[in-house]
Length: 355
Image (tube, rainbow, N blue to C red; front, side):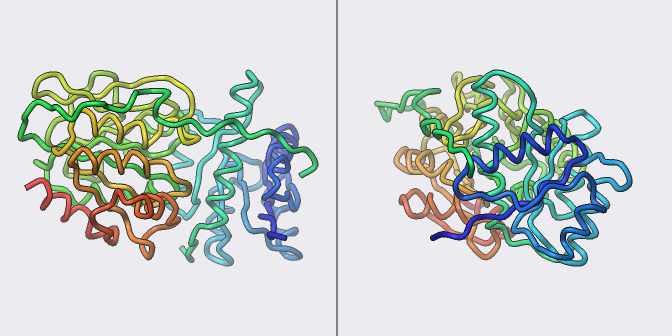
């Protein structure tokens, strides 16, 4: 029998601890080892038993989650998933947690519609599973039916014609998930100020992508911003999909622009890499360069194959430099990848392919 992923939940809210425990326990691959009301209780528990994954609140009494995270990563690295209420300040703090070694960010459960709770269930369980597979460094009682895994068809039909207006302008489309916040920083910092336009889907909750974009904008020579509906894709700028919204590449004449769109989860994600890649296959075709980075699951694999079939050239991050070699590996296995490269070699190849 497959060993279950054992999780320690650390949160000062009894309601959140109970809700998270119920959600995680509903997955047959996950077992809640224990819950703790603050880092001191958690530290005592860790002396006797080490979990596979810790879920950690950001703001707690006696010791905040960031301080506890630093202690864990310096003494005994364990994959940590940060929980946040998604306040503006909280999003900045949680992004700082990613710098300190947290592998995922999830939204704290809240009361709401059945659809929201089911989507949260999938996202939270997937985040814990991704974290359990992550390479971290020193720095059920009830079963629920899983919702059907939807494809990009629910957002955009696959193109039936290969006819396309001629344009010389290149566009780069990128997908990432677990470990992607750091991977994207390294990737984007490498580009010169006049690089081709870049459109990115990073799996991240609503409320984080604006702060994440602003952080990258301050570090890179290119401009980085959270995408807004109808933003033009221009040289020297990267647009990042806003959390909880799909992002599509569109074209009017020679102008590329983006559409921000609601809709169901695709490949269990919103935004979905498959949706972005499909739209790029339709509207950019051979003028696109696709990049798929670290992340769990298979979001982006089918879309990358569609890109290749439309004439695009595609790059996957290699296993050695990926935090989780799920998404790149699935794209490789499906046959949509032309080059498999270490993270620090991807940007140079993108510039070469863009001519």
